[in-house]
Image (cartoon, rainbow, N blue to C red; front, side, top):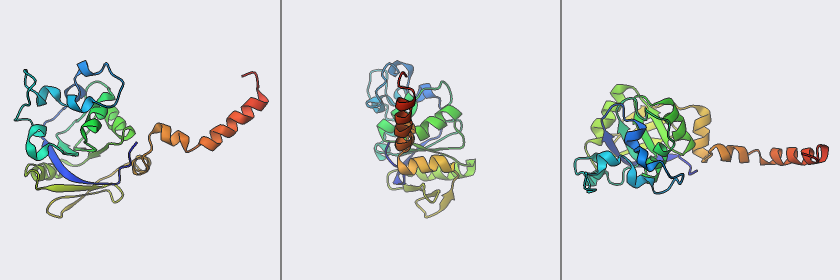
Length: 201
């Protein structure tokens, strides 16, 4: 998993509430267990017209937001069914940070496990970031995980909270497998003792 330390980029405004996981990645794309290639399907029902062409009205299709890495959204982001494909699709598209007032628990947990930083803020702070984001490509936002700060284009700073363990994992690029591998010497030692003491296992 890639480390998340500091991210500076354009923030895309998606001012909609209750964006569920089926909206993030529709069910027809869930047949694969590969994490790559899902970015093209992200928000597909909003991004594409019925003929497959780009919907010019959708924020991620607008030139100013084509390469966004930060998404500012309405409350209750990631609700609905628990599908890990949702953070996979966001990450494959290039989004590393989602900011909202609230997240569905399973989606929130899955973000951390896949290298995405979900940030929950009071409505007034989200409204300020949405307003900044609406200004387009000339407006850049910095998310500093170490300092737990978001710096807006006007220099204003918004502080955010994050669980210390999850912060450690993101800063060091540690998913569940990475955390286990940190204890590899202990695991190897246990396996060696087991082989001697219980060779029939």
